Length: 143
Length: 143
DNA sequence: ATAATGTAAATGCACTTGCATCTATATGGC
DNA sequence: GCCATATAGATGCAAGTGCATTTACATTAT
Image 1 (cartoon, helix red, strand yellow):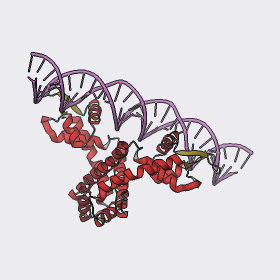
Image 2: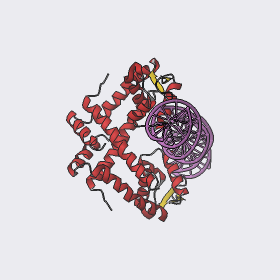
Image 3: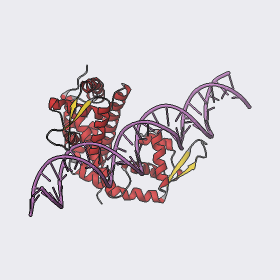
Image 4: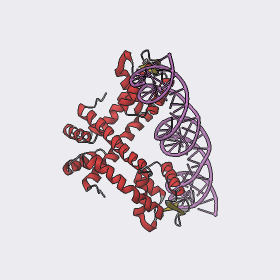
């Protein structure tokens, strides 16, 4: 049987702990501020980047690495809150096109400072630039 | 407003992506093998370490960084599956003592090779020893 | 001893997630 | 055109999670 080395094990536990703590910090800062969860930010961001042409749900699924039903339901909730607009696709009768509404843009804009502050406190305050770059490089080897 | 640097941002995205992918890989290997989720492993491990003296639920809550109700329900499911034994605490009438049953030890033992293999493939194969050590060091600054 | 406050653990309720499946449209082969 | 198969997206159901609250016992102060 394959036994992971001590270095592997400590990298693993550090990875899980760090990711969980930082993520929890961001999520709770958002919740604290009465804002939606982080996943909404990512989705709103992608939709915003797509601009006037909009975006298809399956594209969002790919970009956010969500399960298909996860995207469907996330879009449901965002639509229910009036943040996005769903229209039937002209080219593909099975699908839709998602576009950002101004309320969605506004919510994303309100989320950003909270998100940024959490990243600042959680990462920027704790690592030098070089360390952050090294860390990113090593983590990208795991993806 | 505080804007995170480019290095911070890329460390952040790399952190989230790497953690999610590695974690998903472990979880799906376990599920694939018909075994319970990773959280069970951690819990079973802690309970096993506690030995014959057992462990109090609130201690597990602290060690696993779970919400209190999360522990309560996790223990419920493990007890329902006959993996642990819950007895009322002799010293504290409010509480219980958790002890591992042999079925619990067996499940943890079956989980380990699957878990270890996923760590091997996900981490050990992708990082040198030195890199893993550096990574762990950097990640620990974030905790 | 009594009352007030604190801590251990469980739970009702609303919401989210995972899984499997379903409906509708699209596409390729014949 | 017609059928088989593939893809977009939604959804019923079971299970898990978060929040707030509850129950029970413990501890401290009076």
